[in-house]
Length: 121
Image (cartoon, helix red, strand yellow):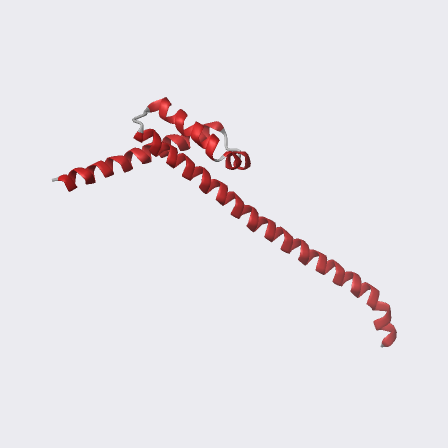
């Protein structure tokens, strides 16, 4: 029995080493995936917040159309350049987001005006 254990020990150690290597690789992959997604989410949130802030600014300045979109895009480029670099969205996607945020800011402004009118009655 001792001879069998002695003969099998090097092979068992190799197998154990392979198993541990696989477990460490899997854990490293999961950690990289989780933290990578967390970082991406932070960049995405920062970009959306910058676009919304700029859209509100454009509404406040009574800008419309391409002038408003240009302000929003310029603001985002200055405000969150790291997010734009890391996410690398196509220009058309950023323009569509800017348009969407502008429309949302306009709706918010309309609601605020409506509340102000009702409060003044």
